[in-house]
Image 1 (tube, one colour):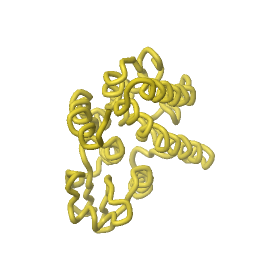
Image 2: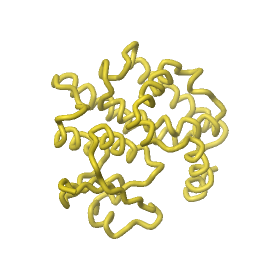
Image 3: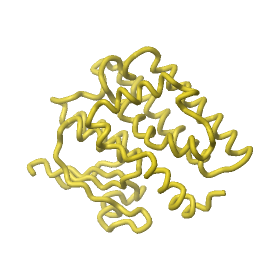
Length: 220
């Protein structure tokens, strides 16, 4: 293929899902190489020697790392179809702010929800719901975070919805009861085939977390 696009990824990673969604929205053909993070490939270590993490987009032999940066790169290189970042500089800055907020808060807090027990789990659950409510407040009555069309923040956040069932089951709560507007937004995102086909089954994620990750990281 002319553009020589390869994605190093692992199926359950919400960060990798961002890249898959972006590539699907732009209708970019690429080769997917599934990584085993317990036994990282020489290619992964070569292409991301600093952090040694996925996802990694390899375009024309050159690596791009960090999911939010990869999505911006995809948007800039293939700018003629389905733009993700707003054209207005202020709106772009705002989209980057909320994606940075998601990156700094959501995964780590969610990990505590399924990893911890008792009071620590309750505290993590409360914090997780507060984060989602802040995001729900930013969404407001808009169909998508950027307005009328699926954009950068939507692509950054919607992959985490495939982990919602894990958090809910582990800590016995309902995200839909707490944040119904956000769940409505998830359903609108899933109406896009590029989104729905890029996200794994929630029950498969739960099995992976409980039977693999929890044992690997010594969850309580």
